[in-house]
Image 1 (cartoon, rainbow, N blue to C red):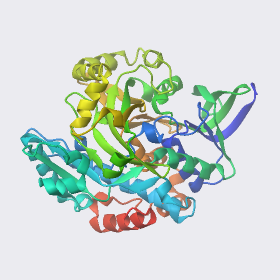
Image 2: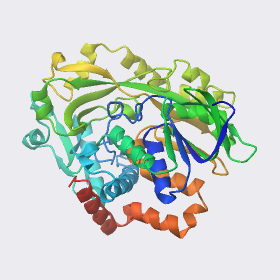
Image 3: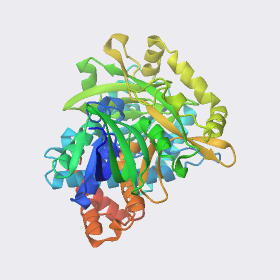
Length: 493
């Protein structure tokens, strides 16, 4: 095995939703591409894309309050919510294409309709939520949103949340009936298996990419360690879609664009309900406001999930800190990522985020009683015996250089691309999986600049994503028609 070098067009690192989406799209755009996918674990989608490691919300900004911050003047900024809603509608188009082409027979294996609710209590928060509703309602993505402070209406939307609650407590909620729950693990496996069924797309599990360096022949030499030792591949294009493991591999490439990036790992835990009667009474994703100093991925939610055809109920996530960059990574991951070129951004971001550090330490120190108390904010009659603790996924938030402060902690996703477009890596976390399709479209535009100009690629892109080249956020008629079509195809109307 060692000593033999294979020439390929594309190497994908990591068998998660990002590599799966990119690999499938490239194979549709140009069927003769030679694509090799490598995953260090022995199964696909076992890290951030796994159903229990991912909130599965189908982030469309319907219920996530961190996407609609209140400004100092009291108004609510909805620009990020509109952007994310737009991106999710693009993702749904590719998923609808999978069903329309017969690649996936039953969309309910990966996507199901689950209402999205934002719930708050207290005079100040109720005032904010009403302003949020009034701002969002004017946009066509959110025109069906409902708002109420009526206890009877609230109980019809979310009985568990209202049962046993103080009737004098000031509460309110936003409601979107067309919310979804997405099993990104199942979708990832479907996309990879579809691509693998075509000639020239090979998947290698239990294979660890150990090095990436410039090839004298052009492109990249990728070193892979597998069952029979190590081998090398010469690839014209490399995508590092390894979740938390992407940063160390990007650093090994040595591209100038990778300099100054660091990572801040955040772990998570769920309380999982084990009482079928309680699970049956809740049918929604209920999101609240994040605690002061907490990362956006820690926004608490009482969450209906549909995994492998079975409904479940989760609450969390409870944030924590680990030096691992992957759930099944090494305790040395964080320390190994520290380089001369990113020490200053790391230190500056650390100083700026002392409240976050304090919050995470507090979360790590929580007892089961503390966790139950947090759950009771959303389900007042919760009993400890009905819930068990489960470990969620590991996320690595991006730290990057900043001219003013030296370094900043970014919440979101970032695609880092070499100047020549021959290598790209995806860093960061939420709302990543939900916006995987538009992220990969942008990557294709950056890294396959000549190919995407051709009639063949343009035609195929518009077949997979009919709105390609247009902005749904600016065209209400097209957005509504698109949502209606994908809703029918995906059986989520």
